[in-house]
Image (cartoon, rainbow, N blue to C red; front, side, top):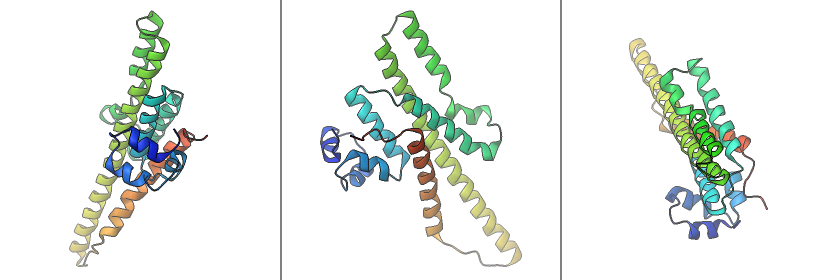
Length: 187
């Protein structure tokens, strides 16, 4: 299934935002390439893995989460245990690998569980980075307003700047995901 319309009909659980975006494209590969949002891309990847049992993108998901961790490093240096929580996937993978080695689950089931785990971590890390970046932006805007009031200037209220900032953060994350996982929908 390479058609966006086919995917939309086959998967009724696709979010409305992704559905509205994807309907503009004939092919899923075009949806992937043009997607401005990493959450939509993760949703597409998850749907594809569930449908095809193709889990070859697990390593790419690890790279994506690691790149998100690096994105936060400029703010924290070494992330605290609280921040690190959003990027930690290795203990879960170790547990799954132990289950495979012991024979409790098959290799395919191990890959499926690995995909589910990495997808969950990637979603949470994506959400965390976005919310953290927006919170920093809002804090800085508030600080600018307070400073402007203290010196007697009139602060500039421009909501388009905030929308552009949010789009830029999503775009950065989407580009990180595209760099970590080449287009999974190419023919």
